[in-house]
Each structure stands twice: as C-alpha cells, then as structure tokens.
Amino acid sequence: MAKNVFKGRSLTVIEDLSIDERRYFFRKCYELKQAAINNDQAKLDEFRINDKDFGIYEVFLENSTRTKESFRNAAKFHHAKVSELMTSSSSINKGESYADTFNMLTGYDNTIFIVRSQVEGLCRWLDDESLDYTRRNNLPVKPAFINAGDGKHEHPTQELLDEFTFLEDNGMDFSNIHVALVGDLYHGRTVHSKADGLKLFDKVKVDLVAPPELAMPENYLEKMKENGFDVTVYSSIEEYLSGSHEIAKMWYFTRPQLERMGERILQKQDVLRESITFRKDFLDRIPVGTKFYHPLPRHKEHPTIPTWLDSTDLNGWERQAINGMYVRIILLAIIAGKVGDDYVSPEVEEDLSAEEDYIVKVDVSGRKDDKKVYSEGVHPIDNGIVIDHICRGDRPDDIRNHMRLISSVLNIDSDRGGEWISKGKDGAFKGIIFRPGEYELSRKDLKRLAAVAPGCTLNVVKDGKIEAKYRMHMPPRVYNFDDLSCKNESCISHPSQGENVPALFYRTLDGHFECAFCGKSHSFKEIWKSRKN
Image 1 (cartoon, helix red, strand yellow):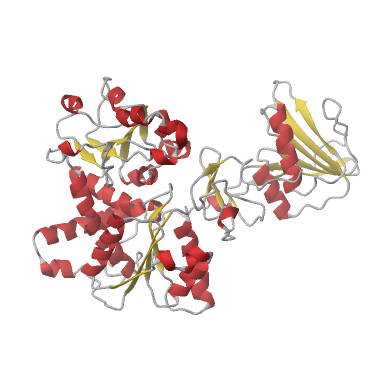
Image 2 (cartoon, rainbow, N blue to C red):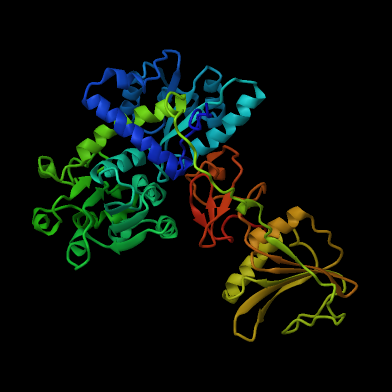
C-alpha cells in the first residue's frame, strides 16, 4: 500500500496542501456531506477516527467561538479526546515562550494542536520547533499544527470551507471561478488566504471591492497577479454595479474592522461602511443566481450583508458556516491517517530554485592589465575590494543610505576607504564602495552581499589587477544571518516577540523577499536590523 501523504501533516497556511491534494480533500468532503444528508452510518464510519486516546489540543490565544466549537464538534464526531489550554491562567500570559509551552504539551501525547493567535506565523514556527523537539527527545510522533487564524495573515481552515462552498455552487467544477471580494480587504485574513487558495481553480477572475482605506494589501494583490488571476479593483459596491463589465455571481463579504485603524478612519466610518454594505436598490442590478458568502459573525449594528437578506436566495453564508463542520472533520481525518490511503500523488518536477547559483564568478583571465579608472574622481586601488553598480537607477540620497547599510552588513564600515555616487552615460546613478587592504571574503560574506545588494559587482583587487570578479543576483532565500529581521511587529520572528525565531525570507516573482512566517513582503533594503551609525 502506498504511504498516506496526509498523515501527520500540518496546515499552517493554505499552500501546505497542494492544489491536487485539496481537490482530493474536497471530493472527500462532498462524500462525507452526502453520507450525512442520507444518514448513511456505514459510510460515515469510513471517515471516523474512533479513538478515544487520539489527543487533540485546542489552544485559542484569541477568542473565536465559531471556529473553536466547529473543531470541538468535529472531534466529537471522531470520538477523539479534546483538551483545552486555559490561556487566561496559563504561563503564556506570564512571559513563557510559545515553544516551551507547546513542547511541554507535546510530551503529553497530543497528536494535533489547533492554534488561534494574533501572532502571525506562530503555527509555522511551532511546526518547525516541534520537529526538533521530538527528535531530541526520541518521541514516537511529531504533532501536527492547524492554524485556526493568525493575526492578519491567514485562516486556512476558513479558506477550505469557503472553497468547498464555492465548489458546491460551481457544480464541483475546478475549471474556473469569478468571485467578488467585498469589505475590509486590508485586515481580513480570510480574503488574504484567497491569494493562494483560489489557485484551486484553473482560471480565476477576482473583483476587489473596497475603499482605498480598506483595500487589499499590495503584497496580496501582487500575489494574485503572479498566480495568474484576472484582478480588477473597485472602490465601492455602487461603482462595481455601475459599469458595463461582468458582475460576479459569487460575492464574499467581510466585516470592516475600523477599530484597528485609528481616529482618522473612525471619523469617516459611516462613509466607509456605506461603500461596502449591500442595499435594497442594488437587487435588480445583480445577476440571477448570485450567492453571497461571509465568514461570520456579522457586525450586529452594521452588517455588510443586512439581515433582511437572510430569507432570500442570495443566502450562501449559512450553508457556508455549516460546511465548516464537514471540512474540519475531513481535515482531522486526513491528519490522523484515517482518510488518504487512496490518494495517489501526481508526478511533480523537483524545485531546484533554492540551489541556483546567484553568485556568478566572472572569468577575468583574458582581461588587460590596464588599471581601471572609475568616473568622477574615484581612483583605482592596488589591493582591496570595489563594490560597483550599487542600487543602479536609484536617487543619490537613497544610494548613499544603502551604501552605509551595506558597509554595516559586511562589517566594513570602520575600515579605510569610502563611497562614491557615479553617473553613467545613460544618466542613471549608481553607488561604488571601495576599501583598500587585504580582504578574504568567505562564501557567507558573498551571500550577505548578494542579499543586501543584488545587482552589484564585486571586484577583488591584488597588485593593481582584478584577481576575482563576482556578479551578485538576488538569492532565492535568505537565512542564517543574525542581523535579519521581518519588519512586521506581529510576526513571530520579529524581535519584539522575544521568541528568538531566526528570520527566513523567500524571493518573490516581483523581486521582493517574503517572510516565511507571516508572508510580509520586503525590499532587499528592508530585511536587516537597524544598522550601525
């Protein structure tokens, strides 16, 4: 029998399950729901873990009755043991590290942790840390972690039930989808998950409906475009319904979280809410067969989907909420290994991007012995290093600031030498750093330079000649440097969290670095801790 690829897996972000794995997952959800509707007990038992010793631990560091109770009832279906960490009295609120708390609970024979927190990337870090812990202590099983929502980052189980509901209304067809995302797209982690989640469908059209103050963050908007989605932006429902463009038959609303945005936003809250709240006079402008969805709960005073719509055919949100039970039953079942034996993984080409050579050594054997004279007064050196083509095309002040950062990152800011701004024939500015002396740069030094100054050229000069020359390209990932830092204070890897989580970044298609934990996008200038001055 083939290995069950789901058993013991964690779900920290929606991408932890491949597109093919999710399609299998949803077919199982459909089978389970049909069995429940038909009261087919024999079929239902095929999905049931049925083990009272199977340990599931709920740790809700942020309140959420709906998600919490949905998982609790899913565990009840499985006849599994459920424990709860009482966070109000736990040591987490007394300064105990997350890693210590969860490692301790791991030792108590818990198989799955369901974690909700405002700390972004927490589940990803716990998943990594628990692997080391179980190995150090020779524990038989590494626990799995399910992210039940982390700050403004992701809510992958909500994404699963959303996708399943979309699929139901799409006739279980994966070929295409057209959906409007309406409301607070800035804070809404459920819509952030859709930047990758909607890749489930072959062809995706997304209409983003929100005023600029509540618009989708740029990094998620870019990710949607990178994923091939057809994305259009509108500032209000009124604007969305006023054009001649195609209107989506699936509308996904979110609650505006204006309380998070300060006094300036609260002063215009009525205008913002009006722009994303459905009105009766909109009814005759939407296509026949349209369905509305909402992650719930709605705001009791200012619901973006007014309660008078509850009894209409537009109501897809109640079934959406009910689907949370089926989705979470299947999720627990596949992690436990009860479901998944019949899944066959497709052939996938190995991703070698992390091994690509981003430090290119240039052959200088055929170069003339003439000394290079740099423009505008920068004279050649007999021995040392010259870093050229720094931040080409940027403004001079920005280049100067970044050259100071480069010097700090390479720990050469106290050495002799200097920096210079040069202007090429094309009118573009570039920076040059020169340091006379004897320098032996290690491979790690070269990696640091590539990460802090992609696009630059390093010349190593000996006896007036260029002995070695390297062209630096942006690395596919950056890690193992103590002075790296995500700029998102809510990220588990940010120094303010006090967890000593080493920063890790992956290169994006648009030439940025994305935090592996919280998903925040950074330029190569932004991933370093404060420099020496």
